[in-house]
Image 1: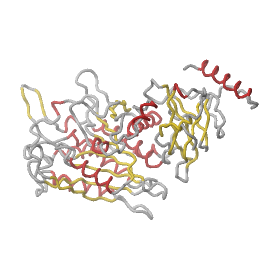
Image 2 (image 1 turned 90 degrees about the vertical axis):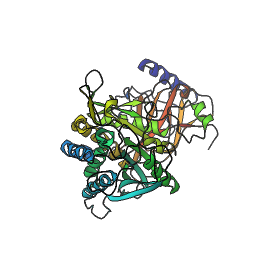
Image 3 (image 1 turned 180 degrees about the vertical axis):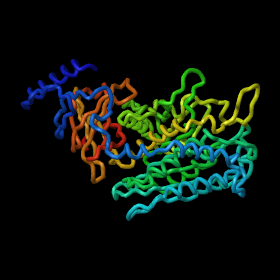
Length: 485
């Protein structure tokens, strides 16, 4: 919808108000967002073709992401590959080879990052073990699948119970998924993702974040998401409040099968309909098939990347995952937890799930030389931007809804306030029903209702919270209220 049409709608809207005895002054189109009072329509805001804030990002984030060190990432990827194999059923007694040695080293690296934090708990490192029985397929004997968990407790009373996860799997595999003895260096799949976790631990551990951040290195992914499924089930059973999961899996090689490399981009996969969807009729009526919590999480990461000018920009893929493949984010999606997956563009299948070898002068195998540490550093900075916002922003408002009590050409919105004490206000975002991304944003201030001069039939709406530092929450997609209350 162009500016001229918005102006016509606004003139018509104010004329209707005047006929009802309410005198309004028609404002000029502002160049900056306008704050509305409860129930008062907001004039057209020249907000631009996206929901990227027009203000500067929160101070301090640049200092954190500037600390990402590609040389450390290089060392971590090389060391992980040097364990020979990290197959889930490989040996655990050796100090130099196999999955047992690998998890001990990962835990040691995480403990090294656990610097003291004045008056609060430092990074907490633990093993998370799940006994898995032989299944006759990819689990040939009973085995303890052991995840490595690093938890950075939140410091804000209203936010510490919220958990935000970053996930990567540290197990690997060779050509035969049941080969637990042959070399499977797993440098990119998923040594690159584990390197992201380790570097995040180092740069985040000294920080005071409002909410709790968990860095989870899983095992058993290649055998069927075993570690992630065990961990996710335990979270649900314990009623842990997990708001978002970011999974980094195969994020180390920007080269493409044909054409120039893509060091400036990464794919970001998200499901459209949650697995635990209960209100199917409401989703159908709203047309909200592309507004699951996972999809909103992906959009949020995309917005943050643009706002910060991240060197690696995510391309949103509106699909749970790639064809014929899977990943740990699915284990969380299956239980109704918002989770997304980051993966490079040009996956080279000769370097995944392949015995290291050379045939006809062609190299196979997932070896360190094909991991670009500078690219992984860019991915790590993107991860840091996302997790710093998620952990420091107020919660998204609850019960965001379109008030549809009568026929009207405008749109009335209501929401419940976020529980955080540092909430400074709210923004409304909206887009055409045919658009996949939020197209506009309007600051409405510290209110919980607003009326907009755009037809609810033609747009999707959402609400997000912000604090005084400028941290934005994820968008709460607007449901519908069809009876008073």
